[in-house]
Image 1 (cartoon, rainbow, N blue to C red):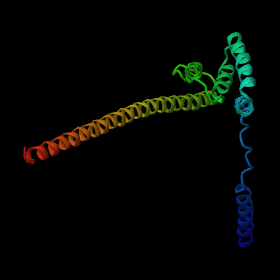
Image 2: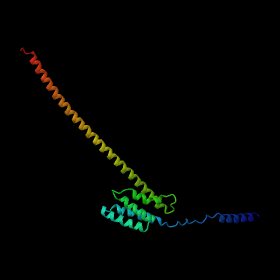
Image 3: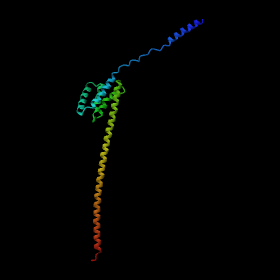
Image 4: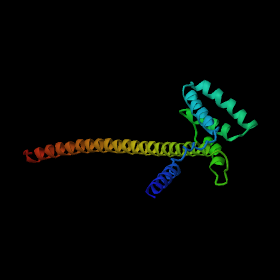
Length: 188
């Protein structure tokens, strides 16, 4: 019986060893190819392109993009035009912000990455607007301070002239007084 038990134990152990096999490696799930990255990459490359354009070429490019946006107002064309508009140094912020607002609406169901880029551009345009308004306000205060300073200098100059005039009159009166005193002290 010992042999039977031993053989039985060996068979059970062999079967148990087979049951504890390592699971086969599981292939990672296939991620869908995202076309949106291409649009973002294209927009960022476009931004670098328009940043290098001179004012005349940039103005031409903006004109072309406005025509394209009028014909086909997609999120992509809106963002492309907003990028071109913000690339200029003297750009007004209202137009790009207006272009971007539809992409920032709560009901927007388009590309999330385009929406994120639109939010970034919108925020930057808002900051630029606030900085421009603050600069204008500061320039206005500086002009007012300069006017006040010039007015104070003018008043100070007028007061200096008045003091000089009064000193001349006082000296003249003192001269007259001395003259009168000399006459009064002289015998007749």
